[in-house]
Amino acid sequence: MESPRKFIVGGNWKCNGTVASVSKLVDELNAAVEANPEDFKSVQAIVAPSFVHIPIVMQRINPLIKVAAQDLHFGHCGAYTGEVSADQLKDLGVEWVIIGHSERRAGTASNYGVMAFESPERVQWKVSYALSRGMKVIICCGETLHERKAEVSIDICKTQLWPVVRAIHSAEEWKRIVIAYEPVWAIGTGVSASKADAEVVHAGIRSWLAKEVSKEVASNVRIQYGGSVSPKNCMDLAQATDIDGFLVGGASLFAESFASIISAGAKFGRNES
Ligand code: PEP
Image 1 (tube, rainbow, N blue to C red):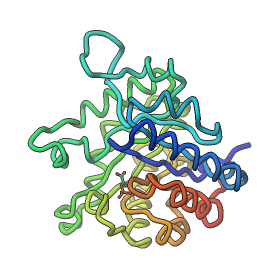
Image 2 (cartoon, rainbow, N blue to C red):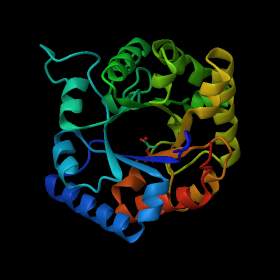
Image 3 (cartoon, rainbow, N blue to C red):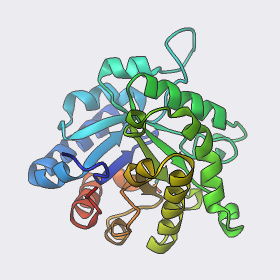
């Protein structure tokens, strides 16, 4: 039986790539799978291209690498201009979705200027609808630098996760949830959290889940770390007891870097139940 905490590494390609560059990246990833199939069997690898590139990636990528959307609409199809529903993603064969990335959340969405996108309620609706359609969800949380300095990192994660936790109604749904702890100050900065600092937050989230949900959910749910993960720092981070994988931005745009992070997960990650 597969471990409930199989190491899981996601690559968030964000708003990057062209048909040509994405096709090349997929071909290089496929070559990496062929070179090291065992690593890609022991670690769950996922890539999240832009919506427009999802069909190309789905057609081309080795099935050992799953495909995720970077976001989705909070409900069904209909008159929602510019949105993409879970129903449409499922129709394409997309199993995974990332929800609540800090680049989309209200208050930390500086990349979008003054516009605030994801309120906790919207994040909750999105998680609920995605789960109701059978999707697997990577739900992001994480504090800003200001909040880290105020030593409220775990409280911020709890506040962001609480509406989501309320939207998950069964043990079966919990099996389709992965939490990504992504400190905002570490994203795209080249400054990763240390293994010790990340572990404190991961363990804090887990013990909070044990109290608020159940011991079983807390010990089985996977918690990824994200924020400037690279081939250099991943070996150390992968050894932390409560780090079950990574969500990788910049380094996932290079097949060689992404593959070496997968291999580090296979070698050093905690990979048993
Ligand atoms: C991310 O955006 O989810 C992320 C972790 O980015 P990076 O690895 O570039 O810091």
